[in-house]
Image (cartoon, rainbow, N blue to C red; front, side):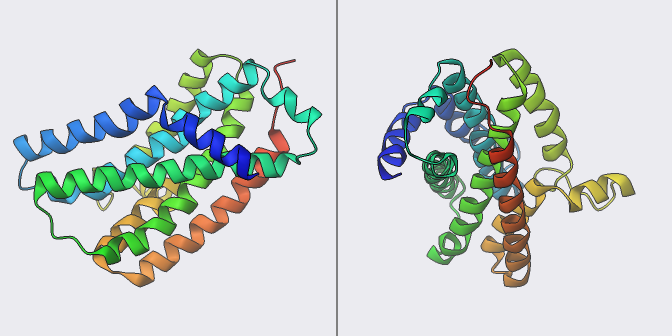
Length: 236
């Protein structure tokens, strides 16, 4: 498990999807908000961090999983004694570590650009939320990648799922005056649980933080089971 974890961690850091979706785009958003909406820029830091982690943990890893399956990487698992669950947890853990590092980079950039007051207590409570949420999204990305056969279908499927999850959250728009149906979707939206966990870490709201953590743990268990049950070794 350790070898798989280390090798996957090294290859993940070199990925160009990572550079664009999870670093350059959040940086551009932070700078744009600082220039054009300086009075609101601070309010969107948590949302930008959450979106950055979400894009990497779900979109980027789904493409990597599909690519590895098409290249026959997963077929090699039949020749090893490693159980499937150990393999999935190993590579998912390495991707989750990358997601945590990404969140730190985006947070540091936001602190510098917006001149935010920062406490290491924020990292203490933010890190487990990001770890559990990113693992959940990675496990779910395995499920999504198993449903499609090419990158075009994967992009369409991922967008169909991701866009409603982003829009039905308080990342950039408040849900207070949204229709009842949208508010209900927001309450059962894993991305909203993730976002609430990050916001509560910034606000030191431990009751919401604990609630978000428990919800994400439940999501983690469900997505892990789904990823194991639907895992495809090849397209044949």
